Image (tube, rainbow, N blue to C red):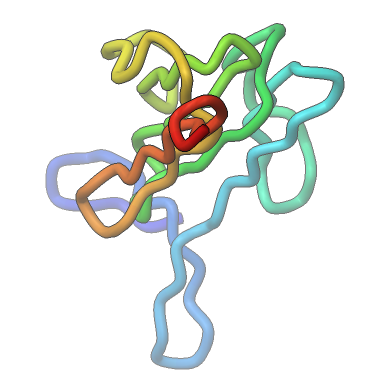
Length: 111
């Protein structure tokens, strides 16, 4: 850990001259979404049920969740809700740079 001039600790590991951020892991087990350290230890439970897919943004501050009802939900790393992006009929959502790509369900759309 390093300290900045403002007194906050910086969460980085130095390898040679390259600095790497500690990466967090999203783990989904039986619909429960957990945020874990790269070592595998639990940081917090982000959502306790209904999760089918999740993605974390590049800097690890935002998490986009797809649940079994087809909703896409955006949460902070702390787990607090920012907003519901889609209320139904979605099968996946993921980050692409600063954007979020939402994949709608095509069942019944082309028949």
